[in-house]
Length: 108
Image (cartoon, rainbow, N blue to C red; front, side, top):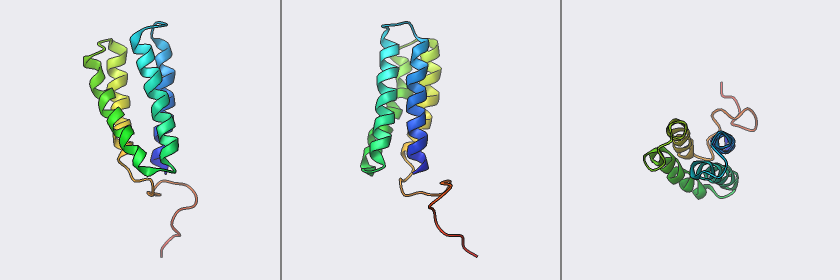
């Protein structure tokens, strides 16, 4: 579950960083739409876990998108955000390793 929350935050951060690009540019729209899509899919994946695979695909696309949209800030943001979204989308929704409440009871 914590991986979904982190992906929601990553998606919102990606959407927020899109505001650094010039208004109306392709890079701005690309990052804004994908950021909000990742955030929405991650929220929906809390109820429907297979939706995380769409976030995996978006993470790979973000990593590679710098080749097609060669704007320097976008390249770095795409590499970092794409890698993190990819990694966190592969963690199971049932994983409660770092979840602060509602997890497994402590074992002695």
